[in-house]
Amino acid sequence: MRLLCLSNGHGEDQIAVRILTELRRLEPDWAIAALPLVGEGHAFAAAQIERIGPRQVLPSGGFLNQDWRQFLRDLAGGLTGLTFGQWQAVRQWSQAGGAVLAVGDIVPLLFAWASDRPFAFVATAKSDYYWRDEQGLLPITAATMLWSRWQRSYFDPWDRWLMKHRHCRAVFPRDRLTTEGLKHLGVPAIAAGNPMMDGLEAPEAEAGTPLLPPGSRWLLLPGSRPPEAQRNWVQLIEALPVNPDRAFVALAAIAPSLPLAEFTQVLSDRGWQPVTSPIPEAIAFQRGAGWCLLGQRHFAPFLQLAEGAIAMAGTATEQCVGLGKPAFTIAGQGPQFTRGFAEAQTRLLGRSVQLLSKPSNFLSAWEAYQSDPAKQEAIAANGRLRLGEAGAAARIAEIVRSQLLESA
Image 1 (cartoon, rainbow, N blue to C red):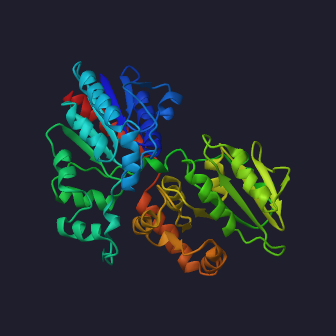
Image 2: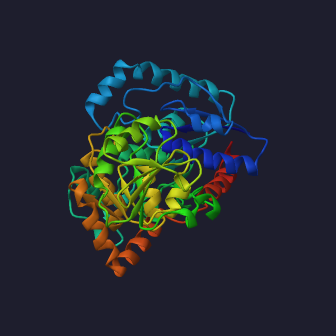
Image 3: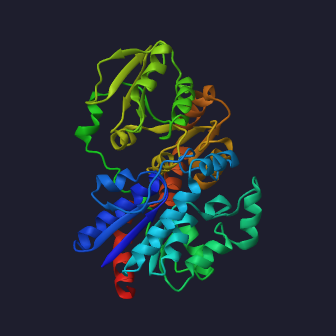
């Protein structure tokens, strides 16, 4: 059995790798390859999954749809030639037979359709939560919500046409609400959960819970794409309530691809002093009663340790919310975490996310959360509802295996 996986982004690559890992466990003899449509696809290389086709890092980092200027930069950077080469690679690969797994949005879905082979689609980008929830319609705050109300779905007609094509064997939306909506519109949608909640376990010994200083524990999420992450980092540090009477531990999850020195320099410039870290392989700073720990391979343990997040990120924020924790977000300059993106994220994640008007508002928002047990319980339940339980990758792999084996 030959399987080609298509994905379009760092988060999508991670999700794809989790599913492919489970597929390998079920079918070790399958010939699995991947074509990352955005970036180099390092996650596939780390998992020893063969990559095919041309690859290139473009100026937008995959967020060309957030701003027309990003789109123009990508065009100048070779987007047209890259897309054509990837299209040719899919067509050439499909000539020998097999099946396709698409992970992401309409771009990998369109490439899967172009293969003329049976395919399954993991829809990571769109959700009906952007325009409604279990209680009904949300107040209209964006033009896209009017369009979604009219068509009764956040997925456009062209999305649904591709998902209802005879070669599409299964569609895996990111949540149950969207799944039910798509099923009513004739899409072969299956509620298997959200794979982004897999792989977040952190052994207590690795997390180092007994070693942490006292105080509230907040996860800092600046994002993963330079130079946006560095700009976001400055705002996150400004949100920390540095004073002798407020004890806290800020746990900063810095992407391994980013230069850590640029983040520590921001702390040094603001009076933070380096100290011995209570967690192995993390770097620690202290100012007043506050601590800031930075780690580049500590996302899972930091996520488990944190009580909530100050966030300017996409997938990582959703994972925090999925564990029942609150996220306090700050709009940035983009190209990803703009005010429009942040506002859309509050609709997607509901009461679990609070968009702050400025960084200095964080402490009062946090204290309001801490003083309201009913709010804490509601946020925890909301996160579990919207993101689902762990184990989705294995469930999707089982269904993909049976559906594609029957048709390939």
